[in-house]
Length: 160
Image (cartoon, rainbow, N blue to C red; front, side, top):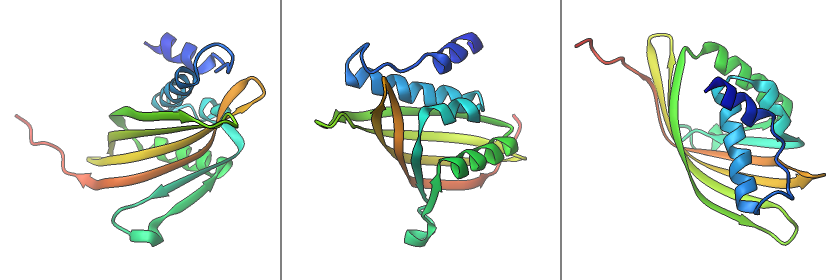
């Protein structure tokens, strides 16, 4: 499994090898593999230099929106993964569409549970990605993560 994750993270997403939908799905799979491997450097290679990540928090309303340029996002990711003992999740791509300019829009639903200390954070979100070709590779230009459900510090299940 680790070898598969490593290979997925190292393979370039060529924009000439397959359909735009396959390329987009491959890029998102590589992003997930980097996240699971807790590899901020691999994640950074998938983001364009001017990438922006926007995250919402449903409990805070419009004022709870956070904006991250690429480097700030990678630093926040490193801090977050350092605090997580274990994590599990799933995602489903809902749509992929491309524009005449070559940019690609991807929407997906995600759910994750991460153990931080003795509690679990539970998040359901809708993620929107704008991907664009840079040279012969597809890169992530924009990510909007709309948290639709956030339950921090879910108590652990009692022992059976």
